[in-house]
Length: 56
Image (cartoon, rainbow, N blue to C red; front, top):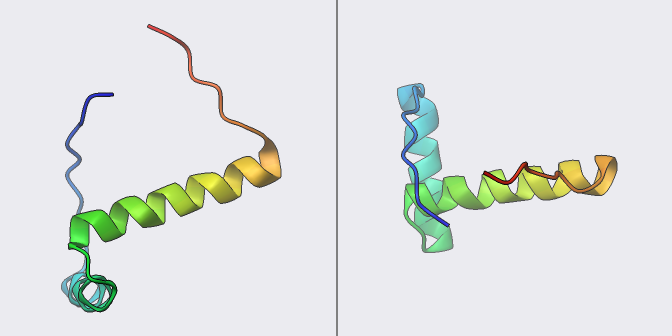
């Protein structure tokens, strides 16, 4: 699996709070965002079924 970049616009206060949560969890902000995304997808798939991606 290749790694892709994503540019994100985020309010400064929200970003500062994200850094506090990430520091508390012993993670970088990037790692914290990845965990939040994975949790979101897991929740979606539990409700709606596994997301199947087309092979290239």
